[in-house]
Amino acid sequence: QVQLVESGGGLVQSGGSLRLSCVASGFTFTVYPMAWYRQAPGKERELVAMITGRGETTSYADSVKGRFTISRDNAKNTMYLQMNSLKPDDTALYYCNQDHRFVSIQKWGQGTQVTVSS
Image (cartoon, rainbow, N blue to C red; front, side, top):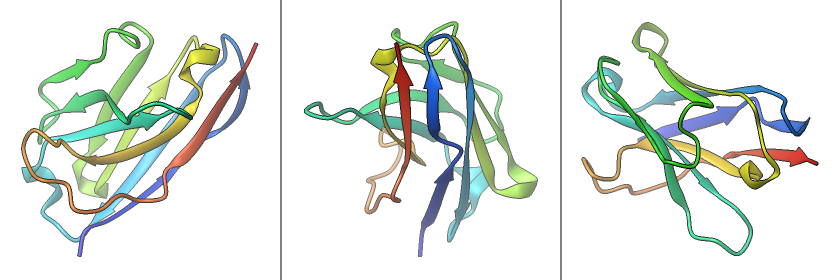
């Protein structure tokens, strides 16, 4: 069974940084493109960043380009999101998962809350 555990969120001031972690299990981690998603109150869940199975290619939503960096450590079945220059608009519940363009997502973890104060 696919399990995803996000951590690293918290409360930070505008301009600050956080690093999110995602520990995955229940599937062959290295095979799958992975992604970070976020959902703010009253908004749809959106894809923030994507990374291919071996970390060779990444892509980002326009809203976070130049500020966020996605990475993965396949030996640890772990993915990361380094978030710099945070803005209040980044406030959301952040989730990790497989890239929905590659597989049909069946479940979500509980996410980790990121709150950025002005």
